[in-house]
Image (cartoon, rainbow, N blue to C red; front, top):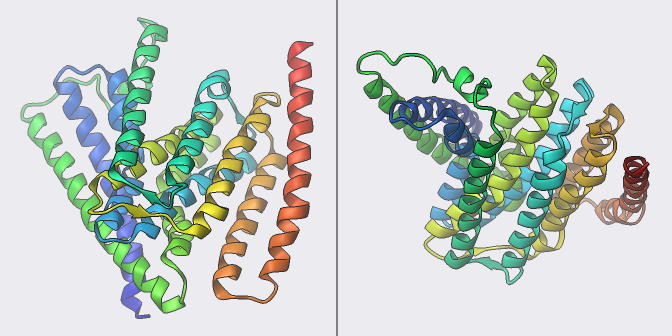
Length: 362
């Protein structure tokens, strides 16, 4: 392993984050100049843009035949989004959960996780599987646009318009500047994903780890940096409902859009490893399901629940590294998690959910 491996990793991550930001701002303002309402821009351009790093890395990995990186990036990002990002954000300040998230978005996230697992059950994600997943994100986006248009107050402020300056009068030749930003963002994403994938593959080979483990850890955390920054800033500013919505929406897009596109462009079906099917996919689904009772209890994620999330993420990451390194006590550690920690947590979540449901009825 050479120093250039770390240079590629760091440079790739920086270019991915910068590229996503430039792409979103350029595309949002360009769309506004063509008369597209700010609300529609927020639910399409901005939503797709926040998943741009994951999309770029997974598509690049699929094109280069590194299917484990593509799968690990998405599954690992979804696990990190809930356990790490929501956990850290809740430690800063308890997070508010809106009713729409509980009734609509979280069930959709769980459903998308189950559908992806079912499609991958045969050990591969074909182009047909990718088409089905991508059709899901198109339907979900159209549903959000229609629903939001019906519910939006006609004279209410639009957060997307204010954030991206879409209400300002465009300057002459602004379209050329915004088009340049859009192209620059795409270029940065392509270069960044190339560097990151190359550095990740080199790191995996040098450490003797599988590409799946690198994708589930290093790449997953790296591509989730925009969501991490957004959620932490939202928690610090007191916008505690934005932090949760950001994570749930990102998870849905990761499964339907990112994996869908990666499967569509891959020269051959993406192979899903047996270890991912046996362990990582179930963990991702369990994490998604665990959101329901926690979110439902008082429509709040408390600090102790955030601490529980972070502790589980550290345990999950530790298990991946220990298992990959062949440590002798990995099996004991895994059994302790499987037969003690997880059942205890499941019972706790069940009690929380039942009590919250009784309070709602009362």
